[in-house]
Image (cartoon, helix red, strand yellow):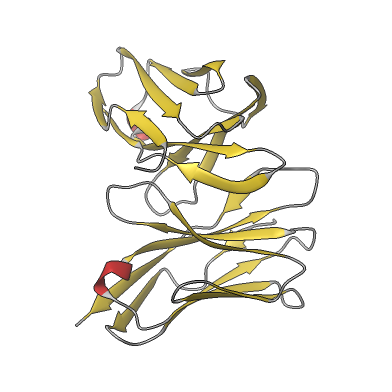
Length: 113
Length: 113
């Protein structure tokens, strides 16, 4: 069935390295995507979003890339810091006639010194 | 502070108890959501309220009963729960059809004993 999925459940990176978290989606009608970060004991927090008419968007230390051809979304975190340790979720909005977000399972990012 | 406040943060209840979860948003949003977050599962959408009207109920058992008395408040009434209902319950809000990003609360960690 249609789903938003993540390739890796856990990603371990060394402090200072770049992190790349991937997400696959299967609904070609999806027009909006968001990355959320969830730290322990907290609710998900918005990181960055991208609309389907774009293929790249940059924020502070984060970049989201969208490849609609292969239905793939990635979150790149530059110079990963211990404070980046969290679970990261991608979410998609499936079309113009809905506001509902569909979330993926999540990837846990672990940053070690 | 995310602008979405959930109380209580933690709740332990017996299977015969009746309790309620509360969510309040201070963002002027017009849509509110209840999500269930279990270990190793995607966020599960339970209920959607738009302009105080329930617009979605994702086959949630009747032991969960939502209430949205106004656009700023959302409740989840719990009755005769099962141990498998133990999870993190997240409330979110958004400005439907304007800004698709959800703002989440920190959640209520529910344990059913």
